[in-house]
Length: 326
Image (cartoon, rainbow, N blue to C red; front, side, top):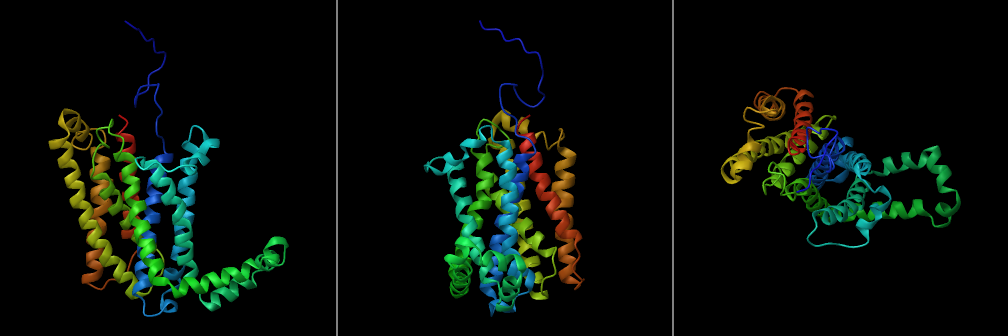
């Protein structure tokens, strides 16, 4: 018989295992936002009669995606135990590894969404960008001037505008993949009853799409753009509520004793108030009602509904990451 003498107590997990802290829910949340912005930016671009007729926010929204994703990947980098080995993800591709899939999806997202953003730059936008003193200095210095990188970037902008439909579908496909992957990352860890569910990818995808729509609705869009996002978002919120119910039902009925024990975290346990209060009520039901009234009574769009959706989306990931480690 082997005896272990422990000099400390960890209330989350055994002290020999690594605890996922705030970095992981931040990464999952910002990854979901990126997915939502990619999908809805592409949809608005593809359904517009002319690219330049979109609002400035809709045209430049794709540039929000790489910013959010970079911050999220920065948080993930902080959590890595062997930070200098991060390059190893890109030396091979493991077909059965969710992390390998995720690493390559993240890599492809950047060029796809940046090309979509370039397609949104009008000739006037491009002229203003080239007039900036920093851009002028860079354009005349060293390799940038020798290779005429500014000119090549302008040509790439023209190519992007000519192939907006293909770029749109590519961003939708990558956005859906990224949004679902954030749930696969948790769902693949079967040793955690709260995470051991095939429904998590769908749940995280719905939440990410809703979060992306909410982020875009915080900015001044054209009436038609905002109205389209609001209608799409209401459908997604309804779907997310259904998926949440299915997730709880499968925990209770299909997860055995450990699944039922995990479900008690939301049904009278530690995270009951946070889950039903911040995620379900304030994060889904209240924004849905506000968006419905906004459309039914032609009320001027307010920032409260999108803000609550973002809070609820972050709370969902925070609760699932921390609750799954109890």
